[in-house]
Image (tube, rainbow, N blue to C red; front, side):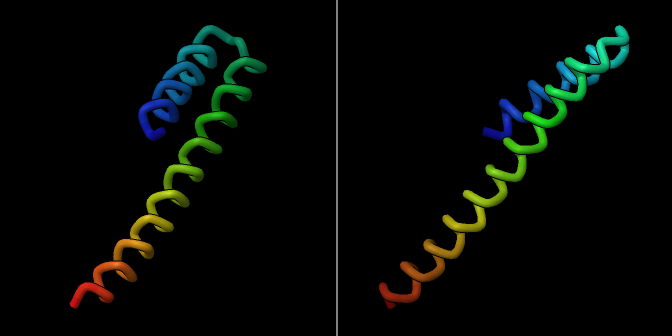
Length: 57
């Protein structure tokens, strides 16, 4: 998911350099959402992993 966020971020930068502000804003918004979703999934899996790790010992 972070890979897709990075791809949309690059698309936003390229579109902004060429003056396509609407496309750049849309791509940046998508990149931002994907980044925060990836962070949320990471935190959830980290918490679940810590909980599961405690029950094994």
